[in-house]
Image (cartoon, rainbow over all chains, first blue to last red; front, top):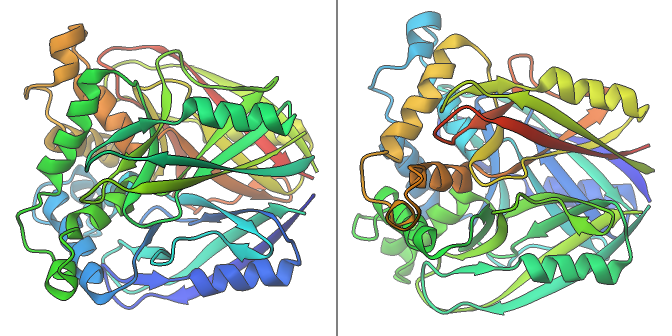
Length: 139
Length: 139
Length: 139
């Protein structure tokens, strides 16, 4: 059993952007030469999140729409009153969705559903350069 | 340190079904002969989720009621407009709750609260056969 | 590769209390003498949760406010009708946020964003003594 670490670097384009990082995580596993294990996918940062979704254009609109409905931008956030950076809602959304998922792999392949992709959610209020950590443990 | 993998296979009965899989995960650990480690419980699929809950009949109603309130079926989903499979809300719910949890075990036993069970949530709009992966790392 | 386990013990002060446990998790890693790996942070209990957040006073109010808005105390919970312990909303909140996160570490240090802390959320309806498990795998 050993451990390998990779970074996935992406540029998000706008608030609500959902980026499919499945291929990058799979490449990290291939490069690691590990056969069976887990990949911990983690966002270092408090205004982004990782989860899985069926990556198709309908849901790329439905997911941000749900976030807007549940955590509106136009209500009062104490974070905004203190820091005036316009992203109180972003922080609360990120803490709800969470910064990490752990995905198993077997025979060098991620175990995912046919219609399931690993995604980064840009929850901050502008495009950003993002680094995501893929920590792999296996043998 | 080594890695072991098991599948938990269940049949869900209806949308909103919550299935207690604690015993199956515990059995996987017992079968692995590992003493201390972590069990990564992962759903390969984009319309189901795993979490923990106190498995009692009240909450088995309260949890689906909260999902219905926060992610209604009868609002417009772009996923529905494209694919007409009636489960746009299911996908969004699954991405919010998430596909994975990681549970520690010690001396061959899951470390859980007294009133805490590991559950699969059926979020799709019909009963389904479901496979859940239990990837165990430990020694 | 080896496994180490530590407990973080805290006293929460009230419902909605958010406790920064980053230093305790970092200490557990330092004590483990592991260099690179993952730390699985897990709550044994069904009315608390772990996530990450920027730990500043605005968000310490915004996060509980969002929980109150999305999962009100004053609606009917079947859990409450059965058990009369006043915390139906606590259970549903905990299952949404989730009991576990997995955080990578490298060269003996947690990989976190500059403004990102690991936190325990007290979702139960009173102050409680809480034990959180930190299961570390690495080398």
